[in-house]
Amino acid sequence: MEAFLVSKSDWINSTLEKIKSAQTKNPAQPKLTKKDFIRLREIALHLATTKLALFNKHYNFSYKNIVIRNQKTRWGSCSRKGNLNFNYKIALIPEHLADYIIVHELSHLGQFNHSHKFWDLVAETIPNHHELRRELRNIHL
Image 1 (cartoon, rainbow, N blue to C red):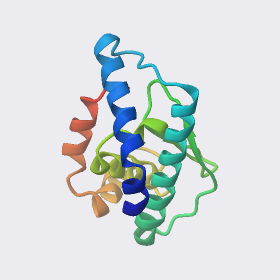
Image 2: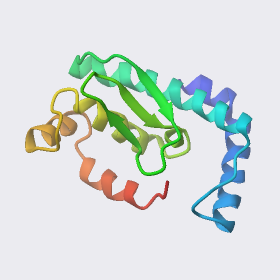
Image 3: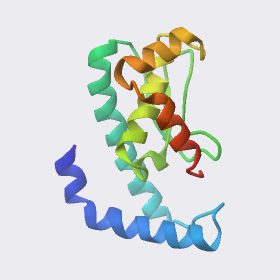
Image 4: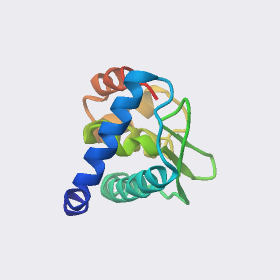
């Protein structure tokens, strides 16, 4: 995973600069080319797939599909059918926040709600999830 990200670091950094520049002009809608979006979606899919495999060694949940979308209001979602959906922007945020999002959605496979049992599942691998959730709220989709 790290080697992949290092090999793409120049492109990732230039794309991040484009996004930051666009967000300064219009925070609600950064402008990306279709090519940039497709590449970010590929990076996000690789990130989600790799991290799900890592974290699921602990949880051992079954899931069906991993889908990367351009969601306006969500970082991720989980369907009752076991499909995990993630926003392509997980490729643009700090890795510890992407980990939190991935574990959050993975934990829904064990508890399809936000009960204490659900948060206990999240805490098994992300004990500081409360802090990360607050940090994530400060990042605008």
